[in-house]
Image 1 (spheres, rainbow, N blue to C red):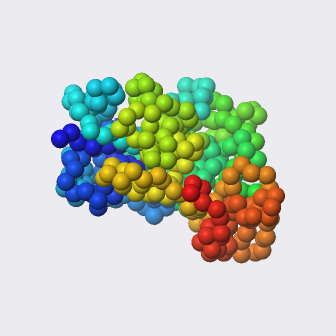
Image 2 (cartoon, helix red, strand yellow):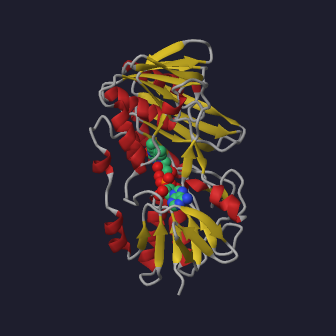
Length: 380
Ligand SMILES: Cc1cc2nc3c(=O)[nH]c(=O)nc-3n(C[C@H](O)[C@H](O)[C@H](O)COP(=O)(O)OP(=O)(O)OC[C@H]3O[C@@H](n4cnc5c(N)ncnc54)[C@H](O)[C@@H]3O)c2cc1C
């Protein structure tokens, strides 16, 4: 009997394996990962520094432990270079594995800003545990960090670095932090809270060049201004890893295209997590992965099941001013913002006065669940 093969040992791969084992303890499972396949919580990467947590401390169970727990053959440090959907095989390192069903849980790559200068290659990105270990080494004994990107992950890193004692300068072309998720008043409040930690903002600008300057670095911005720094961390977004799927002839748009059963255009090939575009949506967050993994486990265990997403608020881990966002879909409407000293409650209502999204800051984050219950599902 050929196995179900899962490519990727991130949250998507492991959650799927766990959910599947709840339904079927016997089906042969193989997981292939180019990293060490230890289980860890990726969201912790952007708030582990101030808490003094090393990469080793963030790693939960090892590949061997996960293999025993999930009765799964795990091939760690093994890159998949090719999928043959006609022969139903994957080329994993030197081994060709024939699959009964194949699941792509390949994640996403950090987007790189093209920079000029002799130090352009020194920009750090943190998208997995090994990156986090390198990041810790790179900033050890340093003081100043320039951070590219004031989105969700950029703001979290900025807060964490500042809380750990670093002097942080944040650069983003948007006029406010979390520009795509927060209405103006909320973005300004978050900015003020982060500035209170000593974080500097350089908004409405991008980075242009990074050059060496003595023991440090010189970051030149699009308006000609210059930031002297010791390290540059980039958090400007992710793009789904689609290369293997493209090469195999599997349909790809922004991500690997799937229907609501997580099925790709190739027979018996599924995708979930950051690499997947499920029913037209890229949702690179934990909650959609949990829902997708539960639905796909049912399908793989023999009960074809479509994924449903309720409204899924995302917690922004900025202790300087905690935030929760549930971005509205692209519907006509407007923000209704209430603000007091304790926080901001911003609700997006459509033209018929229905709640479609929200952004809560400070004490207002306590209303997260109550508001989420009033939102229509993202996918019903
Ligand atoms: C710093 C940070 C903070 C975050 N915070 C939050 C948060 O607070 N809340 C939230 O909801 N979401 C958060 N997210 C997003 C969330 O963590 C991700 O959506 C989720 O972890 C993605 O899981 P994944 O399994 O799809 O991808 P990954 O975890 O990236 O896993 C991909 C796997 O595929 C493997 N792989 C890739 N290519 C190959 C290949 N060719 N051969 C073999 N293996 C391969 C990799 O080795 C890896 O094991 C955060 C993300 C980051 C980066």
